[in-house]
Length: 631
Image (tube, rainbow, N blue to C red):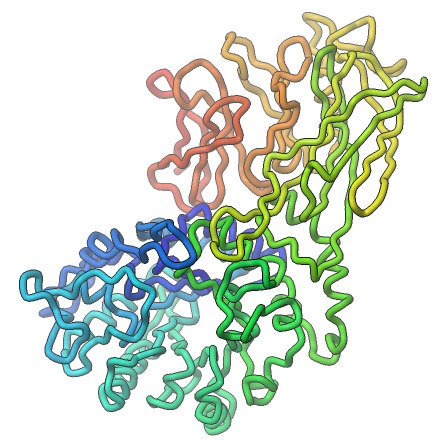
């Protein structure tokens, strides 16, 4: 579960989350779209019921501009914003492409201050807090307190609002079976008002169909099990054990049609601190909720229901104190991998298996680092050094990357390397990373990050050579053989007896391109990377791009440019009309354009009519290239 309601999570950040969810076989993305602090989905007035005069556009316009404020854990205010309906469809389509269902949540009757702040019609004698007499709506709530807001169960507008919002969201989510109505922490709602509201609202949700004609299944937090009547088939999300008897009774009385989503805080709440040195809440576990808390339990047993009554396990990321995807990821990974294994593995296959799990998570260090995920290098996992060589081709005075090292939790100052050639000579090796290790701060959520991959580079003399690279880390010393091809643009030094060098005027492919294209999934790119009017070649291997100039030498001093994701579609064009080609990355319904030929920075651009299933082509218009939707 992601919580953009407290602090907004951008579309690219959600799409990145979907990618990593799919890597670990997670198939439900719960989006908490409304709360006291903000509203995050655009709702139009289209399809309003007869007599409905509520202006629903105010939800996003007014409360999309609010968020939680700075807290005891961060000096940063929450991020404001909202998803347009096209944004939401993009998220839904991207999730569906990865076999992930989006579960939207519109919280009620509590956690509704953002709705009450935006819509005067919802403010009445039984709603809380009281409306400001001057505005007719509740004041903005930027605090982290809960339970102070409530819709009025006696106000017909409360139900008109729920029906309209649910209908529009269902129409945008053709694959969605579930819609979450909240129901938790309604401390300002009387027992009778709560039952009246939830019974009626849940009936309305169960009577709604999505755009594919499929009836919605309501989802509620566990408080609703003891305070309302649940329709057949309802999913109850259990985050605490207070209502365990009522939940078990609903499961039994429904003949198993009522199901449980296990989200007990001590086992699945990622904002709980993972280790003592990481700032986070401790109320769920009375201290850190580490790998053992997320792995060593049986979902059915802790929920108090039969195995058949469990629909699944869900991890929750609440955003009261978290700002931005890297900060969120640090709390989520690697505990997410434990949650995924709990969700998919039979209980008998996991008993006593935490040590085995942690050793397998250690093997994921390189994969997480390569994908750019910011994760907590917890000492509970026996991280190891993983070293791999990369193709190294270049002319004189070129810095060449000869190897990549993954070692989570180790700073560059703890790593040394040397390169000894076959003739006994040595070359200095530089150890760098694009993401330095920033240790955890036990009193703040800001700044902490795991180190990225370490790049081991040497200065090339432009000649073909072989040697041994020796790398020393706190784990010990690793050795790998290294070979450098010669300058592909120098006919006197082609890089080996069987590799003729390209000559000016030849149509032959530069050696650096030929070598890189041997990699599985490599793709050839053609563009004018330096703006001199002549197009040359480049190669994309996964998320990395190498550009080549007219002489066959590498055009980018950094040799390898890390850009986008391996699954992104790539288009070449002169997007700003400056004569230099750069890349555009298409990820579902989002297009990101590279800022400069050798920059890993991208900016989001709008493509008219774009959806996650659209086909694109490049057209020349007004002195620059543009992406247009075909058909």
